[in-house]
Length: 487
Image 1 (cartoon, rainbow, N blue to C red):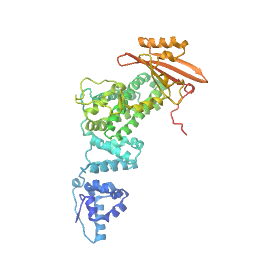
Image 2 (cartoon, rainbow, N blue to C red):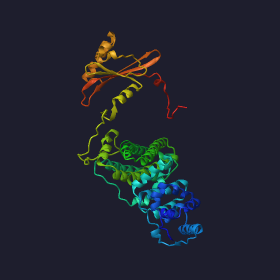
Image 3 (cartoon, one colour):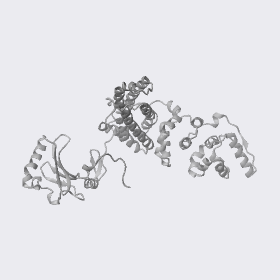
Image 4 (spheres, rainbow, N blue to C red):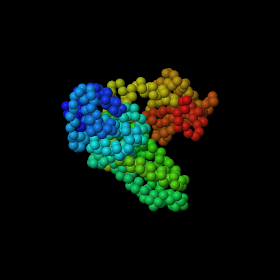
C-alpha cells in the first residue's frame, strides 16, 4: 500500500480499523472519526493532508507515524509518497466536508488559537467561500450548542478570517425599488454620515479639552441623530427580511446580527448622552466604537447576508419583504420606482378554518381566546347601535350577560345617561369625534372607560368600541422595570 497526503481517511480506516485508536490517542480532535455520519460525509473526501492540518500535526510526521503503526500491528511495510503542496492542499469540494473544516477553524478561533495560524489553515484548505457557507456554519455552531452570544462576540473575527475570500466576490445587485436595492442605498448614506463624523474627530485630534470639544458639540449631535435613523434599516431587517429567511431554515445570521443591532442602538444612546454632557475624553472611544460597528455591519450585510438572501429567496419571498416595509419606514431614502414582483406571485390564502386578517391569520377559537385574555373589557356596538359582542373576561369590571346581545345600546344605560350615550354615537357617526374618555372611582379602584369610533378603510362609520380598564395599579408605577421580577 502507498500512503500520501491524498489518501482518504475513510479508505484508510476501512483497511486498518485499528488506526481509529491511534488517531484518537494522537489528538482529541480526531474523536469525531468515531461518528459514522462523519466518516460517511467528511471521511469520504477528507485526505490525510487536511486531517494533519485539523490536528495541528506536520503531515510528514503523521504519515510516518501511521506507517509505523501499520507495520507494528500487521508487519506490513507501507510506502510513503510525497505529493506537491498544491496537490496536498486541494480544497474539499463536498459541502459537508467544507462545513466541518470551517467549523473547526472557528472553534479553534474561539479557543484562542492565533489568527495568523487559522488564516493559513483556511487558505490551505479552502481558497474560496460563499456567503451561504458562512451563514450555514454559524447556524450549525449554534445548533451544536455554541451560545449565540459567543458567536456574536467574535463575529468580527470570523469575518476577518474569511475577508480575503469574501472580498473577491462581486457585491450583490438588485433593480431600483427592490428591498435589497433600498437596503444598499441606505448603507451608502450611512457611510457618508460616518465619514462626516470621522472628519470632526480628526479635526479634534482626540483633544481632552472640553472648550475645544464644545465647539463641535452641535454638529456632532446633529450627525449622531441622523445616524440614529439606521434603526429603521435594522428594524426592516429584523421584522421583514429575517422572518422570510427563517422560512428557509436560515436563523443563525439573524440571531447574531440582531444582537449586534441592539449593541449599536445602545451605543448610539451612549454617544449622544456623552456628547451632550461633554464627557471628554470618554466620548471619543464610544463614537469610534459606534462608527466601526456600523461599518462592520455594512460589510457583513453586503458580503454575507445579502448575497445569501439573493441566492435563497424567490420573487415571492422578496414580495413578502417589500409588502410590510412602509409600516416600519426607511432610513434616509425611500424605494425608487421600478421593481415589482412578477404578476404570477400568488397572494396568501388562509387555510380552511382560519380567518385572513389584515396582518395575519387566526382561527375563531384563537380570536376568542385573545379577546378574553386582554387586560381590558371590550364591548362592540355596530353601526345600527346594537350590542353585538362583549368579552367575557374572568373578572369583568361591569357585569354583562348574553341578554344584551342584539339590544340597542341606549337601552343598556340608565335613563339619566341616555343623552350622553346618544351624543357620543351621533358625533362618532357624523365623523366629528373619534374618542370619548371617562374615569371614575369605585370601591377603591380607579377605572378608565373609553369609547372609540370604529371606521373601515374608506372612513365609513361601522360602530363603537367600549374599553374599560382598572388602572389603579398602573397609576402607581414609577421609574423603570427592565428586568423580570419572578423570583
